Image 1 (cartoon, rainbow, N blue to C red):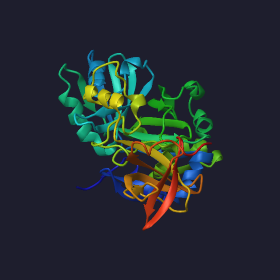
Image 2: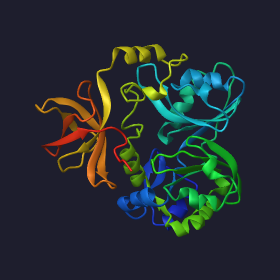
Image 3: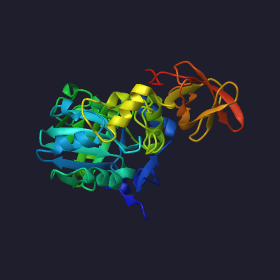
Length: 362
């Protein structure tokens, strides 16, 4: 299957972006170097074009009811202008996808899902839509720019009258920015560096991109690729669907109990509650290498006696800390903070320490 181009594909090519197929789209993986782009976001401000993400509109008097049936978090708790991180549990103790739910009004919700799961999520939610909720897949209508870093607010405030400092974390405003009306300005992101995500109609994408870069020029703004997006999220210990969570990992195993609320019934909630009460056999942990080496997804994790106890799901050399970091599942009992584990890197057994999140502490 040919990868689709995002709206600003040609612009990214002209900026020197190395385009690679990712989740069915041609995406910029880097423009300069992953480390340079990573540090730009941690220290200043950078912009990711993540327009491959999927967006669904759910409308009507039963929209909340449908969301409550299919998601693990309690969406009845969010107010207009608030967003919520959640997941779609499957029937087999796994996760269909993780997503963000935006409450526009009592009868209107905007769901943001992973690019690789757009069709899968649409079909999954649709099968539970028994009360006539109006569902619209608007994924092809929107571009999404994640403007991330400590200077993001200073740069963006120059091009909008919306008081950005008044938008709390995981809240949003719909307003004018960069001369474009009705942009969703969301205080969310996948980097832990602060900033905003801007949802804009494709027709206005290039105008907004150019306005953001003009505003950020004095702060050293740069375009940032998926390579740095991965290292930034891993330093925070944020799960990546397909690596750290998937159809076979439960929210309890993945440490997502905080987005799993048993104040309501949802898909497979009884079985997940049982897991919470009785415990699970494996747990997702984050770790920092003590010995020199870079952990990678798939590497075996062993105990001190050389017994296999799990596998790495994500790993990298942390650009902020200059040390190997990773996440992975280990047998319950080996998952406590400050425990020693041993990652098998190229036939060497390298020591790592299980560490409390975030791995990168500012």
